[in-house]
Image (tube, rainbow, N blue to C red; front, side, top):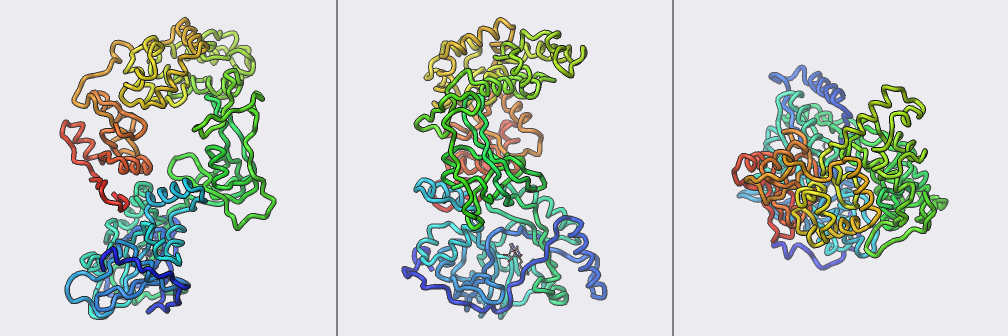
Length: 634
Ligand code: IVH
């Protein structure tokens, strides 16, 4: 049973059919809390004549999005494992299951039962899925669609050595057949399994009545994105096994259990076309124009496609049926095409050779994933630059949104951010839809932006790679635009939170005479180009420490958390790097967490973060063992 002996050398000829000792059932669904309440009502009605005191006890368990398996142990030794198949007959995948490290090859403790059948879900952790896809891309192979399919494919590999390279894992959720032990409750069976060394999901809970179970469903749905594996719902089960037997199953679905389903985060739809948007840095950004589809409660018509390489790598073609993914509030993405749905009429995508906005030949630099329009005078770039300058995080000019920016641009009234400050009330009044009041309001908002603090101005300039946090770091590091203009890439890279690529980008940007002219014009217009006396960095207990904040914090917004860190002299950066001291992880925030785990950056949960702010050295919520090659699942 030693891990090194888990892989047999032989290649499986095929998979032997296995008849399950008792059928593997499926579950009825509850799509919302009302349907869950209706299920509970029926359970109570069916149990009305039974000796049940008060509301029935329910167990809630995350519904793992993997594949169901049945494991047979005889006299405590793992004998055979099978897939669900059609529920009656599955496939013998014992050799592959032996490579799953969390699968016990022996039942722990003394006196193992003569026969034990454990049921559970095999899954691939998200981080492992991402790593596998990165490796595949690096080798020029196609990517896998999702962790579930990858797990299912891995367990049905003909060569167990291949399965062994996939870090599959397991959660056990039931006992099927058993000889020699008796349980009264499902929760007892789970506790016994856990004692005997079987992995039982720690988010499993028992409740008196449906209200507690419903609350658990809501909580698990809220925590969905932060879990290191995929879940598609919550399974609610009647706890008492005698009552389970009494209710039985109808249509292969037990009446004593139900799956509370989360909204799908992926759907398929048709890719009608691929459009191109030319951003302020000249990047040609392809985007998907989709047949509208509802994903996770929101109608999606557009989705990002990143760049040409990504489209080619995933072999996405116009006219394809594609998988669209949306999680939380992130921008929808096209995961990939459904190859089986191809008709042959699909058209491969070609990046235009010329900028769709100005006709200039596009360039693609070595090491840059983006095609770019090199024309600094490109109307699309200019307009996107103005839109960015007036936007919320930058100069925040109220009443001047994307539409007005576009009109001012088209009329030739505004061609650089500095032109905004020369606009008059009369010019605005001449525009359709403007009255004296509204024109005066916009003029006043533009005027007010002259007093917007320097970091916002710096961010508003739209320097490639400079987000607001970076702009803040630069403003703190240099104090004024003049000192920044005089700095070289090395000086810039010396600032906390600024890497060499950003430093280079900033230096190159300020080296352009047109940018120098823009800065001068903004100075003439009276815009803040240095930090105010009260904005200079504070000295405090967190001086010299850099934190990254991700996910949703219960204590309030990330902005508020950032302000608290800065008030103590600390810095908050956008991305996790080797120089990050702590990652503060609220709910959600998968990729930053994975990066921190990879780099060994301590991860703080909200409690630990509060202790840090209170002046205590926190113990990281997740101790990262960088010496282990198992995926971190904290
Ligand atoms: S109980 C009779 N518990 O969901 C109950 N199933 O649609 C049968 N699943 O095929 C299953 N997590 O693959 C149960 N905690 C959990 C589960 C779970 C995932 C899957 C399982 C099953 C499917 C039922």
